[in-house]
Amino acid sequence: MLLSPIRPMNTGPILIVDDDLDIREVLAETLEDRGFEVVTAANGLEAITLVQSMATPPSTILLDLMMPVMDGYSFLERRQRSPALAAIPVAVVTADHGVDRSRLASTPVIPKPIDVPRLLGLLHELGAEMQTSA
Image (tube, rainbow, N blue to C red):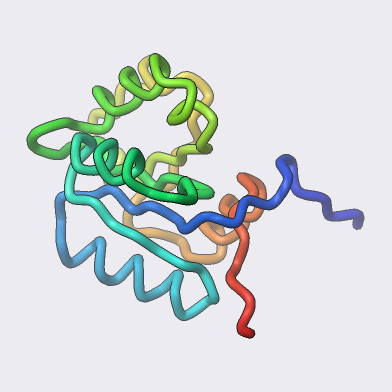
């Protein structure tokens, strides 16, 4: 079987956006243990602020939907109005309760609890790159 990424590999970190600190920490540790660089934000507004301050934009954004301040749907709407944000691949990571898929367009969804092999495959498809040790 021929494997080729859908997108070219991106060198930036993976941005995890989730209001649940435990989920952010466990997911970040899981990805870091597999060689990814990770940054985190607690809501969509914090994520936008973080991305604007980064020298290298995230390779991929893993986005929860239900968060205070700015939820995932509002983040996705804001993302469409910003060329810099729109260029970053996004995958929704959610408990999948009452998800309005019509508002997600073609955004991939990974249900919680997270199937790590499935998530890693999706990250590869989206072009996220593991960091190599020097």
